[in-house]
Image (cartoon, rainbow over the protein chains, first blue to last red):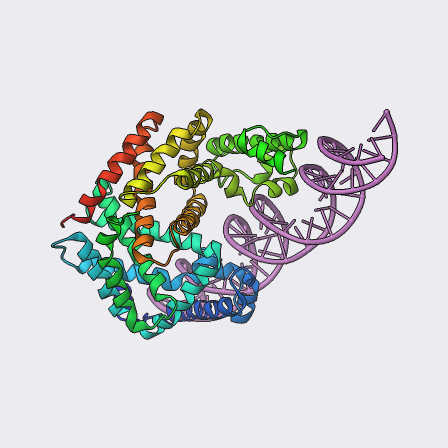
Length: 205
Length: 205
DNA sequence: GTCAGTGTGCCACAGTGTGGCATTTGCTCT
DNA sequence: AGAGCAAATGCCACACTGTGGCACACTGAC
């Protein structure tokens, strides 16, 4: 059992037929969701419409995803999950801001082409739907707590602040990137945003 | 008509009986909501339970508040509304971070005793319920956009960053304050958090 | 082949939020 | 004071999301 789990997580393909089938329906749900929500709007597309297309019962959907928002935000969650992985592998030395920034750049480098197709669409959905925005922000908060844990507990005020600043800067970078959404330009947007942090603290009225 | 509106907004008491009555039921909803949610939990308290106690129909409730979360977050919204007022009255000079911080200190000084009773309870509700947390974060985002508007448009990357940092710092200050929640200590928490901003940027691994 | 485990479908239900329409209640003008 | 008007409210029905219970089907192990 342990060996099979390792097989699944190390290479992309799960060993058993059952698990592959499960992943197929999951993937179908994610893909169809993104495309239907993008076309008809998130709030104005009932979940049942998605389920009819994918031919999956509501009960099954909610065994795969916690909510309608959850399936729409899959790309975002994948990014942060990968980010935590990168952070675990990174040896931290020097300024923590740079560690956070470089880990994000490394993460962006890892994401595949399929992700770069879904992620901008997801950002547009978030922009358009308050409900998605709320869930997205809340997920960011959970990630922040996770990052704080990995760096020695949330007790230090300065550390908590820095992590908040990091995520805030990342969101600003996304806003700069969103209009064009050229995959190659995202790292540059991230670098620009992080470079602007110091100046922003010194802004005069 | 205009005169009456001015009367209402300038002094706390609206002129007409109708408007006072409206405010009474609104206030009853807010008070009862905070107390019921605090006692029985936000997610585990059906809206109908609240409506039965206040003796208000669902239809009426949703003419006063946009959602169940909305009524629970009244204290938070009051704070930010007052903050925007203070910001409008303030003449901005010197470092913008200080302007933001001082405006918040001035706002805290303005809030009345009733607010200081409800606000900590609201924070605990937010901490406990993911749904409330999401709505609260989204409201913060709306306020950020509003602040950016009042300072010359959201186009400047540095300005957007600074506003994000300000709100993030405020949230950290709240986290420091939350355990004790002594009204007099909140300004001190705010000052400490803002004082820690620079150090946080220089944190080493 | 049998049997356990698990993913799934179906049904019913609770809870939130909205639209339409009638009713009441406060306000205004004569 | 009384009639008319506008606003607030109540009531009913409905759409949508999310959950619990139970039965069925399929996969994998013995």
